[in-house]
Image (cartoon, rainbow, N blue to C red):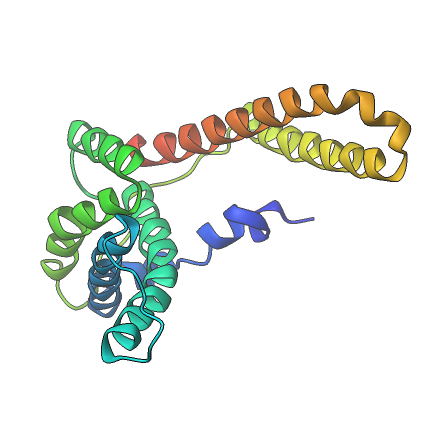
Amino acid sequence: MRFDRIGPLGLWNRFDEQWIGTRRAAQLFFVASLFVLGLLPVFLGRVAPSGKPSVANVFWGIIGAGGAFSVFFLWLGMWRYWARLDASGKWIKRFWFLVMLAGFWYGSCLYCWCVYLPQVTGSGRLGVTSSLTEPVDRGKAVFGRSLVVVWLCFLLFVGLIFTFPKLAFTIPIVHVASIALVLTSFAYVIGWIYRQGVRRH
């Protein structure tokens, strides 16, 4: 099984580095950032759809549909660019790492406007290319695969609880295990992205 083709890592690897550093990609990410910004009133609860058909409902419907796609497109794309192509110094990259981590997709909007667009549009027609090699870290690769195996075992165990109701007494353990797995997985992914972004050869 190729773990780089499934789940979040599969989405991550969908962003081709030769494409993401081009001006065409920059145009798409800029439009996506506008859609994400347009969702801000919706997230703040300032927009309430009316029961009657109206131009406003059509407008907010378009913003909602485009914004839902744009959130993931922009978020993953900016993380990929930060980790693989950003030519900024290490301390500047660390600053933007914190901005995107704490600001979610709105942090990605700021990164897109302040770092990504200036670098890509100033790079010429050929776009930005990666200056980063990725040595294999056996220990971390084994930990990542072990994490996937633990998740599969956990899901299998949850399936057994529904199949055999007598195992229901283990539900509190399942809650604790699920929280621990989510936090461990999140920390692993964040650490993996951080290592990719600050590594230079």
